[in-house]
Length: 353
Image 1 (spheres, rainbow, N blue to C red):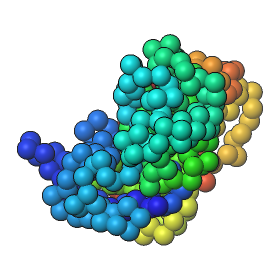
Image 2: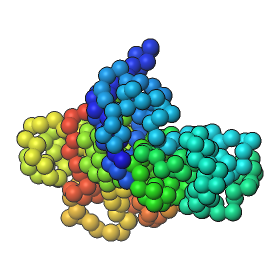
Image 3: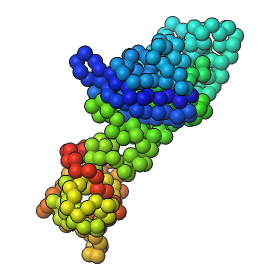
Image 4: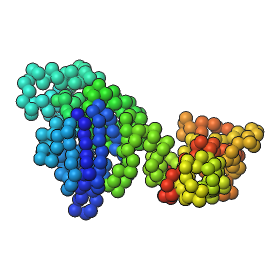
């Protein structure tokens, strides 16, 4: 069943909250919500779950209005950040608990708990104590428990934040596999952009209690709605500019060749270039005919294993780049097709580390 929010607003006593949220999570879709701390993403999840009641607007599950439905009657599975497993119960008892409180008989709820554990790769773990499980195994138990009663929707509240980096990568793929197997509408709140981009069908970006953009991961990264989204999602070079004509834009770095994409001559814009689109020219390579060619020197140079992230200093300003090339270079080129023109917001570009 689909989850839908129509013009939903909520205000805490201190003034923060969410405003005018329109959002739809389709049946079987996984929609990730990202944003900085305090952006309202956790508030959004609590409103859908019924832990908070909106000041205005409508929340529906499968077309049914949830206004008068308490949290424990909304038929939504929730996986919390700390998993909230019961330490005095076995693994199977934890998974079966939602069925017990719904009046399902012991034999049937045990059968469904066993099937649920098998679905998350924990067949044979039924009689184990929760405390004996690793963090990843506990996360799987929490996921099985949230799905065992065939919920109308699944809410994930930063379920991987307590795991180490390697295990997070493994478990995010596991979440996606199990979610697709269940075919349930899922809203996944996370602070991890890579996690969101890698497993979600669509990603919603929130800031200051409002949705800035909801799009597929590729669209969000390659075609952000504005400079705020571009600066938040991934790393970005963002420069104020002014359109010169249909094929060029003026920036502090100089005149760049690009497609003005319908922006009128004289229009103020923000120029976006993702670091991985900056092309280093190895020393000794001519490349004199390349467009948007800059000479300079490498400043801060960070080795990150599979890639190298560097600040390239030119007389007119710095360019942030990423490359797998490990050799020396003193020139870089920005392909015209790598340049996207955004509305003229000019926030500070997300820095490198």
